[in-house]
Length: 176
Length: 156
Image (cartoon, rainbow over all chains, first blue to last red; front, side):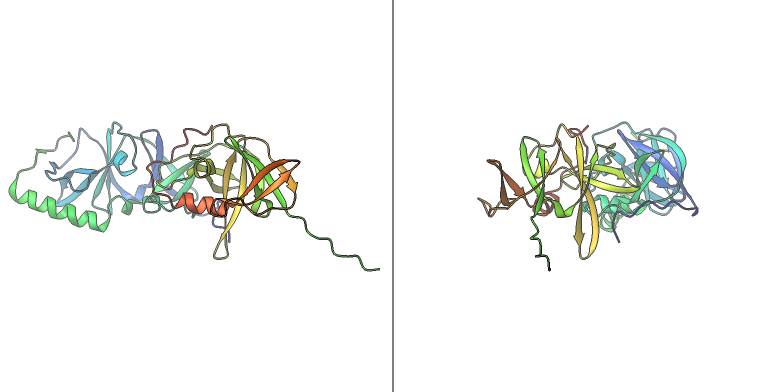
């Protein structure tokens, strides 16, 4: 079977996605994977700046309802030039919150195709696949792809050490 | 009367890649298409400059100008759709070409540099054109050290 299989054209159930942008690029993420969408200047919970940056794309952690969410810079994650994030996606099933430039829309994804096999870099972890929204090919991000197990373990250790010795930078505020 | 078998003369597609005219064995070429819209998104695989939609399929676009000449293609007019096989699984990709293509037949001579990307050469009325091992360029290019961001600044 060809790897680049035709996009299904049937009546299967659709999947609701949040469409967002980072820099000049557009991405989609399953709406079910997003717990909350907030402006960066009105975060609930406590934002703590990590003193020791061991994962360059993560510089803050949000503590909310006894859970930690590591704030991943979208442009750093996707190796893009620095942009101006205004929105944060707090993920539902991963301890991560993603800084993105803006939310474009909510949309219905009718089909997803696997990334062609020629792609063999980090994008294989970044994306669940590709979809087409209004004639445009859009990568569908994998919520589990923002932080690896090793990165999470290191971040948990750093945050834990820091929490034991310091107070949060601010509470209920905005990301610096 | 029994007809004698006709000897198969190999055919090649001659294409312009940047400043260079090259020939490719026609066997793996599926089609030649006018440049559809190139869709780009971030990735880290070198050689890939984006994807195109073709007959409902998403095809990666591999700029072999980067692998062959070290510079991206600039004046893309067509894409050649290539079929390759990984362990009996067919996979298609597109390569941008800068000018019109020709389908020619001819005898392939051994390459001048057996270690390069050429697997032979054609003599087309005195014009010697290297026949390129596309799979070698693609494999070499895809396995190159990953760079960041698959943008397509040089392509239209």
